[in-house]
Structures are given as C-alpha cells and as structure tokens.
Image (cartoon, rainbow, N blue to C red; front, side):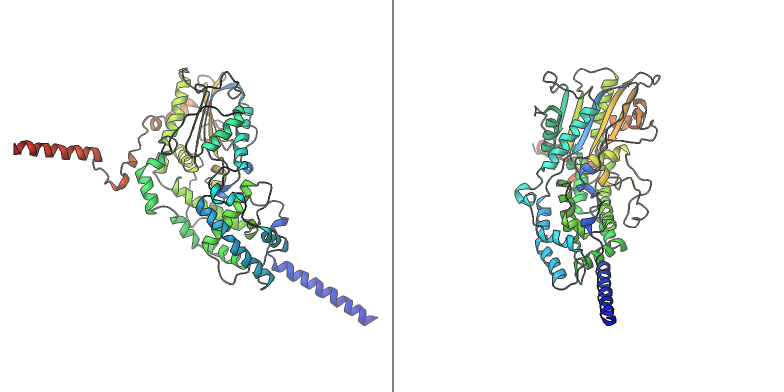
Length: 476
C-alpha cells in the first residue's frame, strides 16, 4: 500500500515537473493574449488609432473644412507580396523544428494557428496595392464621423452637391477618395482629376533633389541600418530565431517578411489575430515600430530639412482658402476641400507645420530614451491617416473671432500658442503666413544632377544659340 502511494506521488511529481518544464520552454502564448500590441507603424489599422466624437466649440460656427488623407487599408505591393508568400517554406521549417527536432518555443495554440496559415486572396499579384474591404470601410466611416461632427458643413443634399461646394482631388489614393465620397454622399460624383506627379498633393515626387537623394540612398535606411546593429535588434534576431526553433539567426529580410505578414493581416482583418504576430513579443513589436519610425523620420519627416519645405504647397492651399473665408470672399469657395494622397505627403505637411515634433532627434542609439516620442508612424500615418483643419467664425472671443482647429486622426492637435488646440487665425498667419505666401521650392532646383547655382537647361540652350548666331554673323 505504501509503495503504491509512493509510486502515485512520484508520477504526480514527474507530471508536475514536466508541466513546469513545458511552461518554462514556451516564451508566451499569443493566442491567449487579451491585449495584443496593435501599433504596427505605417501599416497600423486606422480602426485602432482614430479619435472619437469631437466636442462642440461654444460660440463658434464651422464655416469650412480642409482635409488631407492617406489611402485606406490596402494590399501589399508586389515586392511585399513575394516576401510574404515565400513564408510558406519558412512555416514548414518552423513546424518541423517543433514537431520533429523539438527545438521551438512557440505554444501549441500559436503553432496550430501557424500550421493552418496560407496566403489568402489579398496576396495575389492581381491585388497588389488594391484597397481592401476594410480600406473601403475606413474611408466611409471617416466620412460619416466627420459628417456627424460637422453637420453644418457636411449634410449635403441633391441640390448642393456641386464642385463649387465640395472640392475633391486625388493622386494614387483615388479609390480611397471614391469610398470617402460614398460615405459622405451615398454615391459618387464628379471629381477634379489630377496626375500622379501632382505638385500640390505630392510635391516630393516632382522634387529632383528629394528623388536623387532617395535613389542614391544617401538617407534611406541609414539610421535603420545602424539600428540593426544595436543590441535591441540583435537580441530580437536571436530571440525570434530561438523561438522558432532555429540554431542560427534568421535573416533580417525574413524578420521583415514575418512582420509584414503580421501587420497587413491585422489591418485588413481587425477582429482576427494573425498567426505571424505570435512570432514577436510585445517589446519586439515596439522595436520594429521604432525601426520604421526611424525610416520615415528621415525619409519624410524632421530628419532632413528638405522635408520641412515640401509640405509648403499644401499649407499654402489651406491658408489661401482660410484667408478667403476671413475676408468673406466666398465666391467660388467650397464648404469642404478634400485631398487624398500618401503618407509621405502627409508627413511632409506635418513637418512643415511643426506637428508632433520631438525636441530630440530620433537616432539608432536612443530607442529607450524615445519611448514617449511624438513621431510615431502608428499614430500619425497609419492607414487612412488624415489631417483635418476646420475654420470657425466665433462670437465671444473679442476681436479674434476667426479660429482654426486642427485634428490629426480625428484627435485635436495641441499647438503651442493655441487654447486647447483652438488657434486664432492671426496667430496662424504670424506663424505660417510668410512661409505660405512665399512657397518656393527652389531647394529642388538641383534636380537631375544639375550643379547648385547653375543656369536652367533652357537658359543654357538660349545662350548657345546666341553664340552660334553671333558666330554666323561674323562669318558673313
């Protein structure tokens, strides 16, 4: 009897120890995570970051609304699709590492979810960069929330839906604009067409210096590549590789592919968990988020002076409309101006206006110090990100009766010098007036390898012709 009892206790102890070892072997179980990390850089779902109902401003009447928006959730580009589809082979290796070699450290539920994963319809080449159903919903719901918040401006009927009252313009985000119009008008109407090289909506695309620097790689990924060699990212490589059951570090390209698979799927299916998100811990997702923030900080934000100039055409357009309203020159002034472009143009505008600027520059070496940074692409340039400016006529603010309120992702922008985000137009004119009135992009004149200060090609041709003509006359 005693020996049987001892045997039973031994079996129980061994079972307890094996459970303990199993629990110790598994890093975490993403499938059981009640609050997963949702901030995925520029591929963050707008559903998770936008603001709610806006407060009414007492004694003020909205007169005009101006908006710049990026495209809603869309499918990856061709290069990203190829990388994500290639994870099919990696998935089989991860499963083999766990089932056969017993080397992996993913929990059973996460592994089963990964086992069932396969590339879906959004990853077909025909769908590259196409707006997803969630992307259509992003834009429709944005339009309806703005309509609810500003009924005086955005309660159109069949009689006032005209180009004079509502102005729409888009570059590559045309499908997002059409979805927004459906949300606003319940139908699609005539729009203002524009080319992809639109000097208003995408000034950076027509800026030779910006494009040359991008092509030469003089800024692109420099800080990110440095960050790749820092302990934070090196530890991420080691821990993820170990978690997946590899005896060596997987490549950075594979990390990027898994991260893209995670965040794209979460963006186009906001109620589902992507099996590839189980690859990363919360802290590792924060590291990957910062890595992309570094990229865009120098590509389109405060990291380079040229970016703070390229938002000028859009700022000029906004201020021009507001000046007309201020002077009561309403003839031809629309009630709503809605532009649709991309996140680079949006970030250029934010940099020009000084929105979400940090006192300290983002670098490869200050990840820990910048945990509370303002420049977070997840917040300022997610899918469907937008900047909205509303002009108000007020009756209870003394002589300063013209006000402007800015909203980033439907959250008030806290401008220094403004009252809880509500700015006097005179203050904005003193801050932006000179820049908006003299919106010269001469910084782009060094395009196509031209030497700074050299005459334009057309002038050079005229000079050559003049010399030839003079020589001709002398020969006569």
